[in-house]
Image 1 (cartoon, helix red, strand yellow):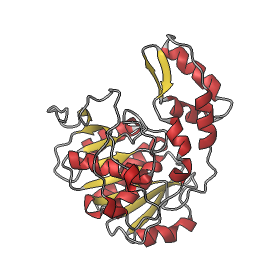
Image 2 (image 1 turned 30 degrees about the horizontal axis):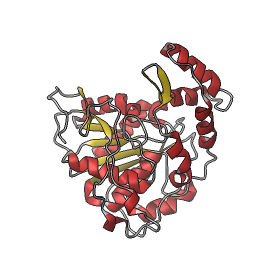
Image 3 (image 1 turned 135 degrees about the vertical axis):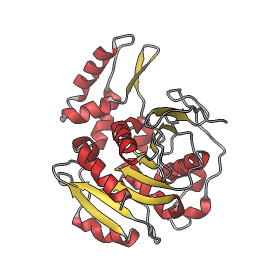
Image 4 (image 1 turned 90 degrees about the vertical axis):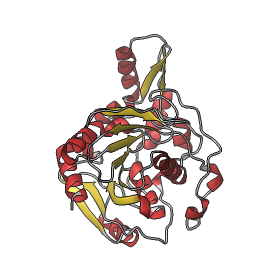
Length: 316
């Protein structure tokens, strides 16, 4: 299948999906080869269940020739979470920037499998299709774990690694994700109502289980309408089924020797001092920094500080 592409001036967004126009309903991709040998060091890795699927992605084209920046979002997020960040980074660095939807998120293919093995294979396949041999990989939360696994298994592919507010350990922070999933599944909306009305009614129904307005607004970015029917674009069944997998991290006895930045928020507890030994075991050249007054969603809370941190790191 060919890539949908066109020539654009620097900084202008290109919407692309492998083999399909961005925004289309994607059908699962099957029969693609996965790299089984790379998972030999990871216990209980089920290679046969991790065939790559088609990922939706956006490209912000820069004129520079340095390695592109590739952004991976967190659970319930999408490639659009980093659009404003991407535009700024293109302008300030000249580099090409990609933002990618994970499987079961955004406009990417749905699959009953949602593991770090599967998401890593998806990313490797996408970068291969785009002829990207080396990149700066930047991942937030769930996307940060995908980025870490990719760097450990395919170090030649990752020139530099940025991990946003997550560590390579079991996520022990008290998570509200199960209640979010339950609340989203319980939302009922009539057909053929205005989008503004649907969004207001959905937020009203979420409020009982999702107290923070900012979190409700974040979850509502996944509310979509098609032919008058409203639904969630994330695959709630797959997320629910694999939530324990997503909160864990595979065991590795290998290291990534490239430059690495772990960037946490001072108002978040996702990276603690207890994580430092494991971070430095797997990523011996890691630098751990914190952005003041930032929560788990650093890039949304403090975008200018976040951008400055990323630029300082990639240019160092």
